[in-house]
Length: 113
Length: 114
Image 1 (cartoon, rainbow over the protein chains, first blue to last red):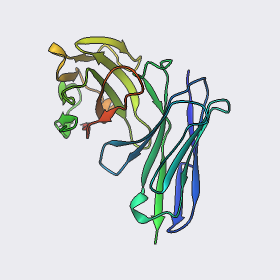
Image 2 (cartoon, helix red, strand yellow):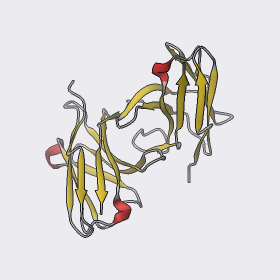
Image 3 (cartoon, chains in turn blue, orange):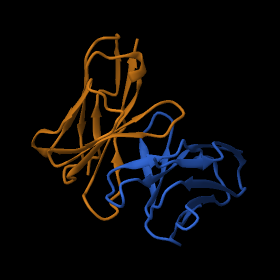
Image 4 (cartoon, helix red, strand yellow):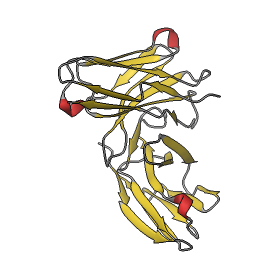
């Protein structure tokens, strides 16, 4: 059974600081997704990582994928309050068929002034 | 693109009652998914459709749960004889088949079983 572990589960940061969220998964997969969820809202797709070494950046967020280590990272640069949300990583558990995602428990990020 | 629409947003019911949720996917998407999310957890896969065909169901989907997607458009998820453990956010998502198509999620239906 595929397991996806995120850490930390809770992260309190000061504005302007940098930090990294880690996502480890237990079986081979070359498709990894990052989502953002605001309280009471749905999930918003941030990044889709499709191959070993993939790196994608959007604003202050950068995601990378190392399929050999079964590890993805979401790096936050110079955090701002608007980044406060829960961040989920998800792995395609269906061998690339993209219909069955296994999610981590999420990282609740709070950015303080 | 009006997004994935789910109704109702909230449902409160008594244990033992039946409930039905509706999902309207993005119109050109042929895949539709149901996930369930409980507090403090990530979403868990329940089932998915390609067009009108239901192609996989999770073990989480007991025989009290049934999902349909008539004509490959909107979908309904029915829970019969609800139990308190069914209380959760039920999320619908849609995508195009193939490739690394992103899943677009709806806002969910929050079910509370009293």
